[in-house]
Image 1: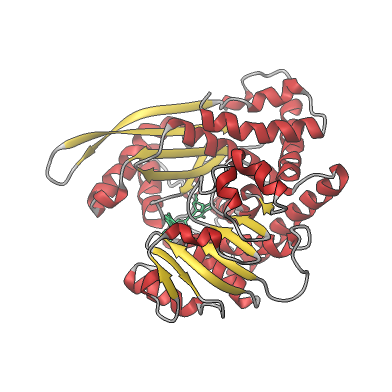
Image 2: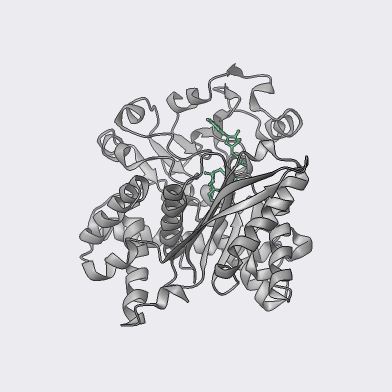
Length: 421
Ligand code: NAD
């Protein structure tokens, strides 16, 4: 087992022990049911061919078809893909969705690829993985450096291979191909819903605006910021890969979004103090630090000690590594964990999958209501376990997920191969 997966499982084991789950059942969650590792040959525009390492992991399918994004990134590796698929398993269970967890990745720097090369890679990935994909088996979605366009190419390739139109084989597609209006803002908006639902438990005043520092101003961070600013909170600092900007009086998010769209970087925004150091965001004095960029940004106790916030919302996947957990707890910093805070994305992906099966379009208001209800139910369930077991938010979230997973695993009975179907 890889070191990241092993570390991530420590959190699960703590929750399992707390609620007294049967070791034999929990053991089903210690390894993925299948991981396909392939080499995808990419034909470059100059006619040369380069082999790229690629993976797709189906971690556990006891609750339903596996679900999770595909990322194109130069640092992707097998351990990361399996760890993220494990987290998706926990997240789908916590959100009460009929999905297991999956994840995929290609080791490539997407910035180095032309549009045609990206299309050939997206289609090549699907051809290589087709045997484990499918609307009732494994349903991918976008992730880092993949978006609607890549999902459009992938669903088109998959339908070609299947010999029939399969819109529900992928989510995060453009609306023109059966995508869901409201999918792109869903993760950021869901992060804001989670913050509001948990603010009392996170030690924040129940009324009035909060000061927020935000790391990441991409798909997720931008929509979180808009929702939080509309609700009356003050975004006092924002970082992206270009650096950190700060304004104690609050940053105008609509204007910042326009500048970021035009210039590609938040540091081009005027009326703020700017530094070219992205990591400066972490020490910002604020009520809430929102992590919406990368994994592993708070990796250990030393990183945790630099923080100047009362609570953290993890909208990125695994931005806080287990080695930092104790130092954060000692400092009294409560964390709204990733499997709750970013569960809005997969929730609206579920609506998109249902829409594809039904052949009837949902309207944006129904999607927003569905997101609000699912996030609210998940937050209520976490709150109950926190009180029942006198534990922190992350351990409670894992406990809710584990109860659902273990009920399904034991209901499958003695059929040891249930996971592979
Ligand atoms: P994105 O690529 O659109 O945006 C990432 C942002 O992070 C960009 O603004 C980038 O400049 C910034 N960034 C990169 N390096 C940075 C650094 N060192 N310091 C500060 N900022 C930095 O990606 P996204 O879709 O917004 O996803 C962000 C995170 O949320 C990822 O961890 C992703 O796995 C997770 N997530 C996304 C979704 C979704 O629906 N898109 C769902 C669940 C989880």
